[in-house]
Image (cartoon, rainbow, N blue to C red):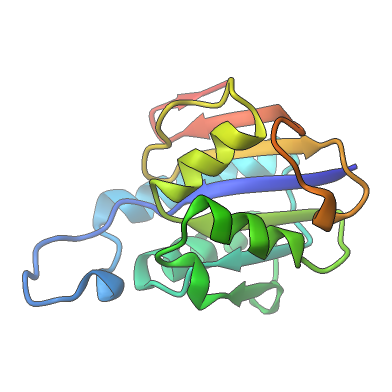
Length: 163
């Protein structure tokens, strides 16, 4: 069994119109949400072996804030450019090439992240809000065997709701 935690980046700051999308930072609400969701992850025992994140500034900041709350060293975070503007197919390919560890967290963007969650389990939310965290137990022994419907949802939470 493998575990995959999908995390949508926290709320970003739109106040500087001159910034390109890739460079938008987190706003105050986003920083607070990342702190809250990191605490919820720690309480739920969600401690991935690795975090693989989009390199967009808001995703990088989300990764670092969450890692601090779950006591994961920053060295366990890596960034993959392809996650930034990924399609569902791209995310599937990225996951298929994950290193052989038991639990990986993927930090990315909608709509691809929501599409991936729904692909893993049709009962996943129809839309992942900012800083949503959804953890799946996958009925696979190797990442390359990921397939539609292979995920059982063990945890879902967002800054406004938690189950």
